[in-house]
Amino acid sequence: MARPNQSMLEGPLFPSIVRFTVPIILTSLLQLLFNAADLVVVGHFCGSVSVAAVGSTGAITNLMVNFFIGLSIGAGVCVAHGLGSREDTVVHNTVHTALPTAIASGLFLTIIGVAFSGTFLRMMGTPDNVLPLSAIYMQIYFGGITFSMVYNFCAAILRAAGDTKSPLLYLTVAGVVNVILNIFFVTVLHMNVAGVALATTLSQGISAVLVTRALMKRTDACRLYWNKMRFHKDQLTKMLRIGVPAGIQSALFSISNVLIQSSVNSFGDVFMSGSAASSNIEGFVYVSINAFSQAAVNFVGQNAGARKYRRVYQTLWICLGCVTVVGLTLGFAAWAFGRQLLSIYITDSPQAIEYGILRLGYICLPYFLCGLMDVSTGALRGLGASVVPMVISILGICGLRIFWIYTIFQTYHTPQCLFFSYTVSWFITFLFQMVSFALVARKFPKETNPAA
Image (cartoon, rainbow, N blue to C red):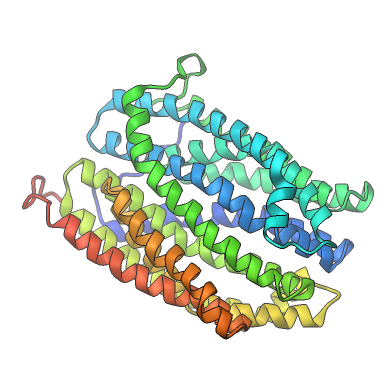
């Protein structure tokens, strides 16, 4: 039986946003456990070089994957608009366009990722003692990337319909399988990083099957029929109009992170290991604050579709307040308990742990600024304005970080200087996104539908 949709158009917004966001946070945390389990298992049984090998692939895989994840954002916004305006045909056609798009995206990524993983890693300056293991991990990961694409597109559709619990349930099942397979492949079959990559791929396959099955069992316009999947021109065009700028923005974020990872690599494999473990811990903080961005996208999207503009403003301010509190709390906790957390990943290098603590202090403590930036960006996307936040983010995040790396970092070649670029870019980009939202919101009619 399909789960009932959560109403985004009626009732108090704060409890609705919290109910919507908590399952997304838990789901995202489970997704991170895929990679965390990889790092923990190889750290305990294979050593810090294997940790560095897995961690060094993150920037380049995100660069390639995030563009297509942006298309799933476009699919979710289209579904949210269609549900808000009660256009069932639009919703139906969007769903049946999204799945073929997901499959095509995954197959393309498999070809590129498998063929050029070694080339990409060498371009990033990956050390010779880490490169072979990193290449193996990437090739297996991209071999099953279609599963990840299908899951993300289907989950975006379910969330746009108000169902955030189903993706959580399915990912819980897949996460348990991932941990079990990690331990089996590494400790019994002695597959090292290849084992954890294969475990991740298989578990993502399980989550993709379950979330697709959920769409097939729905009783509303979001129901999926395999024999009706095809590319609907109007829906594909709107999905691309919203999703491509979001994907470009995410991909360019990743380019700046690739440059930062290359700079991290310049400090050696011990520093890489500490940075990789720290980055994984940061991920748990990030997904918790990013969930409010997803709430902003969907609540703003449905209420804008229903022309309830007062609720659009309320959604933005509630999400900004929530992300500040959550970001400050979790960021401080991650830094305060950093040594204990890092020791879970790294067992053979106290120096690597110290490097990880350094990174946590510079990134986790001000992480709420990243959340403010993401919420303002999500609100703009919910309104259907995707190009504007893309341009602002390209200049504020990518442009500023690239400028920083090639100017200030060259003068002050220290990890502290490198990591401080994150804080500066988050703050500046947030300010410009808020100005942009205010300008877009000026075009709202007085209040076409005054119902709150």
